[in-house]
Length: 137
Image (cartoon, rainbow, N blue to C red):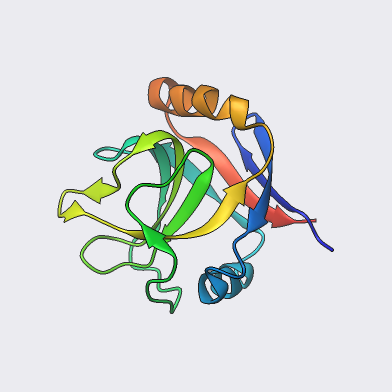
C-alpha cells in the first residue's frame, strides 16, 4: 500500500488520507499527485500555512469540513467566497479570509514528526515561502 509523504521546506512528514470521512476530496486530490507548490503563512487564520490555488476547481463540495483544524490536519477549501486553497494547521487555527470565517475539508492528517510543525510554521512566517510537495510512494 502506498505511503503519503508531505515535504515542506526541510521537513518531511508521513501522512494519511481521511478516505472514510472525505472520500470525494481524497479522490480529487489523488488525481493531481504528485502535487508540488509553495506554502506561505496564513494572514487571518492564526497558526497555519497555506497553498493559494486561485480559481482551481477540484470538483468537490463540503465534506468533513471544519473551521478549527488541529495541528497536523490539512484542509482543502474548495472555493466559493474565497479562493481555493490548502491549509496546514501547525497550532491554533480559526480558518478565515478577508471575507470572513471559512470551513475546509479535512482530508489529510500528518502522522509523524508533529513536533516539527511549530518549527515549520515559524520558518515560513519569518523566512517566507517554502516548497511543499505531496506524494504517494
